[in-house]
Image (cartoon, rainbow, N blue to C red):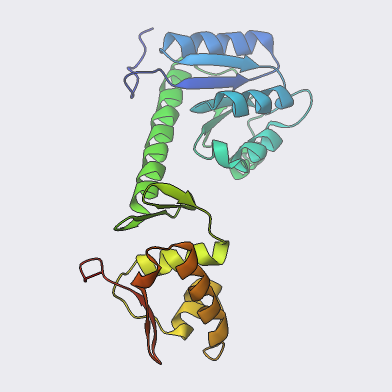
Amino acid sequence: MSSPPLAESGEAPRVLVIDHETDTRDLVLSNIRNMGFVADGASSGLEGLSAARALRPAVIVLDLMLPDMLGTAVCSAIRHDAALAGVGILMLTARTSDYDRIQGLEAGADDYVAKPFNERELVLRVPALARRAADSHAAREASVRASVYRWRGIEVEVNRHRVTLDGEPVTLRPLEFKLLSTLLAAPGTLFSRGDLLRLVWGIEDDNDSRTVDTHVRRLRERVAPYGAALETVHRLGYRWRDAAAGR
């Protein structure tokens, strides 16, 4: 049987097969390797979770009935692991009722194939999940790149919660980080204290100006020598100076 070409060039995507039945696991591994993937196997839920965290596969082929735990529990654990957020999960099981299928999908599976499976169906579905995982990863990377604010020597990576001044990392407290991100997202925009309380603190209290003033003062100190760019507009609020404005 000819295999469809892989979507990605370069390093082959990795697939993890978690199935307690040796014959089934070996058959799935053989088919997946024939597609050009790197494939690894695990025979239990705990072994599979450990392998998934160590190997970071693009796709996991997961049996529903495992000796130590249900595949739905494995699936749920994977979906709650941020490092495995984009992995594609194909549930492979002899239980084919609508209830079992829905349980698998609700636990986070992307697709569902019944045993005994059609090899051609597997050959089509695994690469499709690998492509989806690659697209998801690319989208997350684009999101990270898009959520970067720069102002002269300051760089704020929002999704990574990282700030550098002239290339050197700076540690900010969570509210200081959110305050800086809010201001740098719109240089030159005037924010009232009430605006900042809503956007940064998530509270509706226009009279609580001392909280904002204190954090502004601390932020100026932490991002020196750029702190002067955080301007006070008398009686109105604060703004981060537009980068095009004079120093």
